[in-house]
Image (cartoon, rainbow, N blue to C red; front, side, top):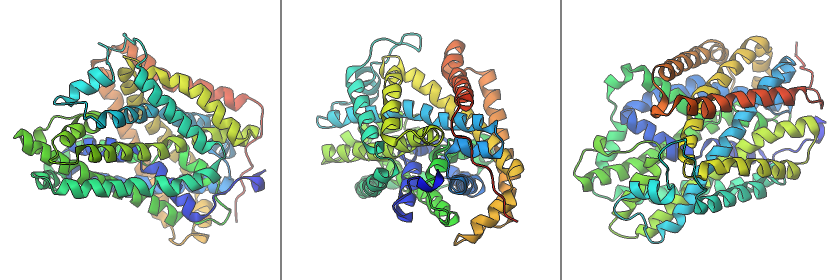
Length: 497
């Protein structure tokens, strides 16, 4: 029954948990390299535009839906239309898929903590990352043996997730009071050090100076919206699940605004840290900031170790600070993603949190071992691409259409305003019904076109079919099975006159 449902210890605990979910590796690992590849300062304009036209409206929608129905994504969407429980399971399943491969980055960070003690990457961090840490094979067809240091790092990651989630949201409420502010403090320490390095201001200027010509390129805008969806944990059931543990009169609008601004503010802040280091690295190499070679995971695990090695002093200390920052940022998002999926099981079959955490880890840990094999990097890259560029986009589009047109959205807005500090205007409905769906449709079409014309990273088509489309289809099938399995029905939707 809804009245016996666990609740957050306080509004502060809820906001901290929501911020912890949103502020993760995407802010330090993903945002800086997307900004770097998108022209530095030019990326900030579409990024913050995406925050206010899609990010915050979607946060309000998801937190409010969970709080109003006191259910996770599966049963919440089932309340709108019974068959939509299937969609809710699929959306929550994306969270499960993300945490399974997302744990790989935490395993990498665990291994790098050890290597930082001796700065083991030496003068060629790129070769060290791919050859000595990943032991990367020649391609996705050569999966190879498990890389045992990474297996140990993966096991420690899943153990931490289990220990945090075994007592439900009440234990999460206590953990986030440490894991949310700690990385902010560590980032501040890194920024102070970064700004004292020669060339740092060149990197900062590249980060802040917009190349307005880049704004004419549609891909920059598409990347901005994609980054907002990824970093805010949207369209994957996370915020619906977290909102479901709020009281009936909990404030939503301002909480969503705080969460969105905290997330993007952290990305902006992390940009100063990373670009100050990139400026220093460009100075050492005698090249411009735009010519420092980096892509994807290389920014955190190649470029940063390079910069750390060349620091004038305290290299080991700042290396440890950086990788501890990655771990503390990542663990909040990891247990939030798992909670989004397992909340559906608790709602439908009343399985206790400890059992849910145990069962999920026992299933997810073996699956995640694929990504710490010698060929695991390629499968990680493929699954990440499809889940983020196709899965989350499709989920977000359906979610906007369902709530915008099938749900009593005017009644929803009225109830949110009655208990919130910041009233919502009609703009919120316009964004959910028209602007965000239009943007997501364009993103989806562009992504499909790109994939049709050019195989991603020149991977074999069979690999993207299995790892990419196969992952999405598997969750469609599992979602259907979970929907049809007997259990507690979705609560009936009550409207207000």
